[in-house]
Image (tube, rainbow, N blue to C red; front, side, top):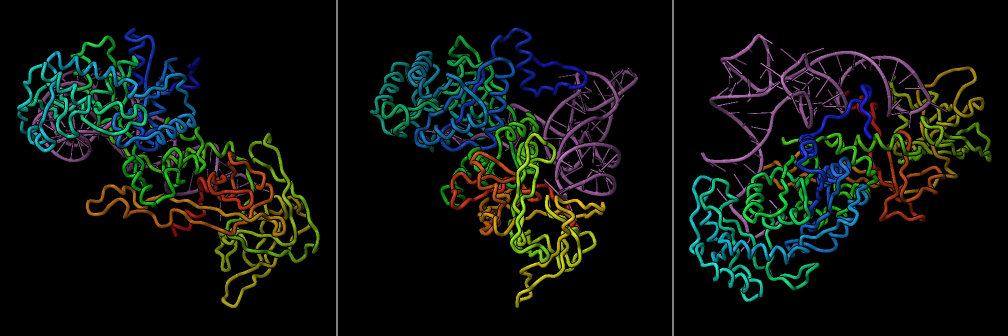
Length: 564
RNA sequence: UGGGGGAUGGUCUAAUGGCAAGACAGCGGACUCUGACUCCGCUUAUCGGGGUUCGAAUCCCUGUCCCCCAGCCA
């Protein structure tokens, strides 16, 4: 139950939820049925997540049902590999279709009967125009089309021809079944659209039983009708298709009359969102498969370490409207930060190690330092981190000629090693090239745990890992796949010309605190001061852990540097 | 150019004739054993022009710009 108190104002409904609410209120519908209808010709991406959250969300909020229906009417492009991946992704996102798993191909018999019915009504005909001819006859945006010479074939002939199409007696491309509507219609889609074409292709579910397959405009509305969908929600580019959606259902006088509503599809900058382009990246090996952690596919986001909740929250934040919009990639990144900040335990990992020797720390001494797993949530407990004379810190935490505002190591500056000691850098050792290879430091034995008994403060706290105890790991630092906001917009260049060459930086010699050896595949951690990480599900092994950086922490120091 | 849609801060979303609100980004500050988190403050918007009205982002007229449609794809 939603308790709507002044303290927790209810979020205003988006325009589709408003329609649903009104339909419930007026009694137009008492049960809400929606559907998510992917074509199994590729993997789902973040744009689909928006649709999934909308359709399953509306059903859930109204005690309704949401069907998962595969729109598998084009066997040339579809496969069970995609069917399986899509189901896994929807489930992973946290949605459940119960027993309502359907395939448009389940309706092929019924669809065929409806087509025959249309022919008998004189509302469909078999047309022998070739593809090119059909285009010619269709007219243009400003000129009406002209009728096909086959438009007035007698019903009996159409019936016989359609039967032959079905029986495989006609070759692909020789003819098609067309709805007889209006070749002068200002809406191009209504100029006698093809509703069945000959395709002698093996279908992943119906095998070789069909030689003809229905087109989207004929199949989709009828599938919705068969499943008693109340609200058929799709993206804006189908607005023109609503006319044919309505025409089919109205002329067939179907008992159930679903309505189509359109919303704006999701655009995010610094990426591409079409399945066709994602497929290209996969097939041409620009990425490591559909689940490459840089891809905004659901499986890519999963491998990257995004949580289902963060994606759902993202979809909730961006809203549902009708205007074309571009969401900043930062909003997506923010949603996973917000989630992980609350739920991910903390740990220390040094990405680019620089050794420091604490010269006044006893040679063979070791200590167990107590560290909190989450600074804001004591319930997440503590762990111990081994400390010794030689440790690694982040290379970027030392600067030879440090500005005043640099709070980390430089000669003579005291810094806190998190949960350990206050340490002062005395000297930097360089190699023959002048490269700093080691720091000599001294520690204050009175500051165990990290605070000084005399109350003195240090500005900087840095992470570290004991050299003797640290575990080596490979870490992959990901950045946006494209280096420009809209890789699609350039008229001369291809979107692939804008691939970001630095989108995956592999760091082979990171050193992590030993507790990280126990981390499970499903878990995510924050490497303090760095970002959120998880094990790579494909490449990581206990012998050689491989971590993916999910997202960085916000870094106001870096921002300051950039400004200067 | 025919038809169908759409224009609110830098970005996204709300306001359903009655104080233009929220989020993100940005800027400034506080706090801090993560330069994280959190908290506080600030800058920035109704596409243009007319009209109706006591009152318009909202209604009317008009103009401009953007998106979609000429697959036997979905």
